[in-house]
Amino acid sequence: MKKIITLCLVALFSLGLANAQEPQKNEKKTVTTEFVTDIDCAGCAKKVNNTIPYEKGVKDVKVDVDTKIVTVTYDPAKTNDDALVKAFTKIKIKATPKK
Image (tube, rainbow, N blue to C red):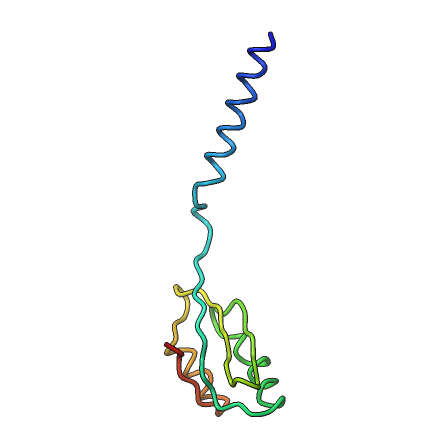
């Protein structure tokens, strides 16, 4: 009886482990791009934080005023670097993707 229970537990554990390693079909891939910008104050950072996160596909935005770097995480199926550069241009901020 102990062998049967142990065998069932091992089989259950194996199925769970195999299922956890497979990538989920509904998981969305994201891309993170750093943009070199011409921001120089907290007001510019606020303008970025009030605009860029609402662009289609954008998941996260981090602004570093000291280094003038804006890091944007987005869904590549919904937007791309060129569209984000245009979004920066709309708020009068120059931005270029960092290589």
